[in-house]
Length: 507
Image (cartoon, rainbow, N blue to C red; front, side):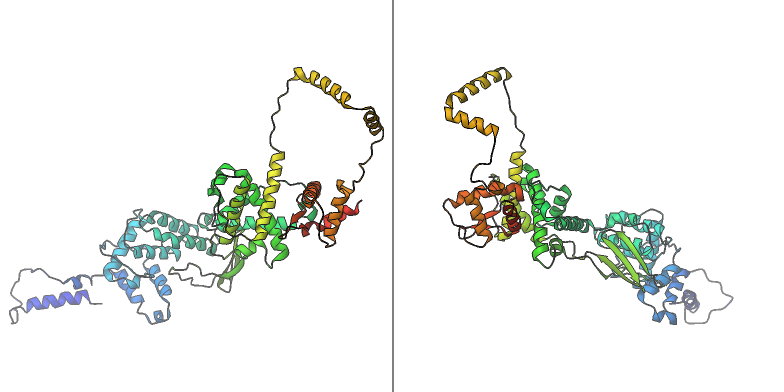
């Protein structure tokens, strides 16, 4: 650095030598203005800045990282205040004091003094990041909650000038809470765990569906509507059911069918796939290396103690030998296109079943998925029809007359033999001839036994037999047990074979 006193002495010497001859000590000279170049003005540095600059030239500093040097210089300048504003622009990747020239450096400390007094004015973005780096490293505020609040307050004030700052400061605030073992609630406003929490809802519903006893699955249909599960599915899917036109008109139907189909798919994946449904869609939670305060200039100094920090039920941080890992769901937080296909298929097929005036085009959905959706739709619509409110108006004044007329008509239509049969049946009721287990006829029972034994189910009027069997066994399994295959022949749904065989054995 140029020596200011030496420069002044040189200028005075030049004045004394003016005219090319020695000046007599007895002569008196009037004061003359001292003119300095701009570069010479810049050399007037306050002593603290001189010391900070000298710090970088010490022999031991050669072995320091840029972050280490920054923190050592920041500690030296922690309380420094300047009054030389900088009107230019300062841009730097990972800015530090060393990347600033003297004018920029004095301008930064002038601006910082204003910020600390509550005046957060817009400046070069790199200045703002240097200020954040200071706070992250415990400069300007005591490490812990005080520094956390200072980072939070400055970011919330300055983000109006620099919206891109959100991308960095949000994760820094979370890291700060973990690193300094602060209360988890401080980090929660800045956690991006809505996605992970929604996946957790799916995972719990997945496990519940898989663990449900087999017999319990096949009772009389009941809607599986779960608003929390529906919201989670909607938030995780590329196809938004909540924005569907059908949802505005039939929210209950769409919610019930969607949740029911999810339960069916969960059981299907559990029995036929290597991974469960939720894992297939979003992967599994697992630990991965984590760099604390990524994209910031941060120097930890000493090694952090080994620790386990439970941030919430979706995320846990671990530190071992100074190395951090984050145990969480690392799927990037994106919506699932595969789940979107499933929800679109539900919307499309339910619209068709309801004869909705705004149909959707089918997208070539897998047959097993279409079958599950149709089965759930059928069950729901039958349940809804059975539970629909009915309004009956009766004119009680005419009731006695109706009863009397009906009795007379019935009596007039009976012949003598019929009267005797009615009387006998009242005295000793018996099962109708030809009825077997579950009220099946001999032909219906034979068709089921043939299908159970792997023989073709051919018979006259087979369509009527299939309908009758499905109706009679619906209370047993809560579903249709027979369907027609691609050749048009009746086939027994494999899932219900054991139930049908047991029922027939109870003859």
